[in-house]
Image (cartoon, rainbow over all chains, first blue to last red; front, side, top):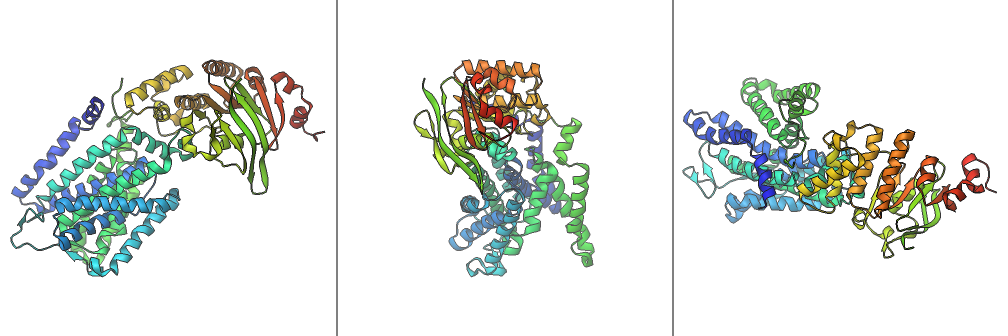
Length: 342
Length: 241
């Protein structure tokens, strides 16, 4: 690794980032000791959505292609991991990486038609893609059709092979490992030539061509990396919840839109925006879903409603997202260059 | 003199409109070629054809005697050493001034510190060094024109296509800009400039090509063009006799 890359990573793993990661690291045993499975599960969900929102943001925030169909990639990754485990007895330790790779390859195939479209037309097409995947999986017997698939059940909940343990506590570590890997890889991408090229494409595609950027190649790269990590997130979901069906993993609202919302309210022009967004948004929806909706079953759907209200408020008060607001107020250093070069 | 660019019989139609009609001319090494003509004459269309954004219906454009630009994908043309600016200034608005230049400079190298240092030098040269950390959308018109030039210079061109870089500048700014262009030209970079400001184009050009309704109606030294009957008719109106 070159000296430059090392200094880039030093700027990523700043003291606040180290503190944040350490807090998550020690939260697992503490919450287990205090017997707080809801909070532990919420932290897991925050990490899971942060993984997805960061991947989504590479495409939407950095490259300028808004997607409301990332559930397609999430579902593909989830089903790949599940099928490898169920039909071929391949451990999810390996399966999730295959899930990511297969998802990236399918993104390559989808990219050719999708990238013939721009702006809102692209966004609409991504919804269509994810919904199509859902409909196909609903009627496909090999993948369990509408019934879904269940992981192998291990008698005492202690299996390193299938990563099955009681409670949500251990899964914080699984999500954290993936999170840190993704954080590092994405940061190296966005601070390199490729990252600058993606931003140039976001700003103006025609101008990008006149400065020598092969726009299709770089857009494709962005989509594939984005799909890769979203597919891995699907695998992590399988490890944690052990059951999937097409309605859950290809869900337009709870997967595609929630991921995008995490990115948008955090701030799409910021690297850490989607992380902050997910850690704000997911606890709120989880709280409303588990505590308020559960007590008022006749008002099912209230949690979606409250999400809508939250989005309205944030887009009115902080149109540039939370990080945009913090930058304006001077609490967060405005990114001038990713690395200190002077 | 060696020719760097040969435009041969370029025709470009948009539906029924013939935007360029069998246009041919040459650009020589180290030359500044002025490209003038009334509004709608096809000047910007010609730039878009040379830089590959439009494909012509007929004709070819030979660069350095061996590349036919009409057959090369647009993103590979800058690599060959052709840089351009846009008439409607198009900075990458959400990036800082220096990042705008860095993006262009990545064409020739990939180490971020090298790119940064080169971008700094180019910004010093076009007089935007103090503004380097400003968001590009916050620049004024004059500064945006300079940024356009900086971006085009950062790809290290042999040929620059400048689309109305002097429009909207006051006389002092125009003459400063022309001095900058002359110094760039002295380094061996050929320039084709589309320009409406006659004083600017007459002052700097070695030769001038005049387009009118997509046709080349005159070509020659500035003083000859200024006295050309067809050109005067085209600008003042009336039939070409």
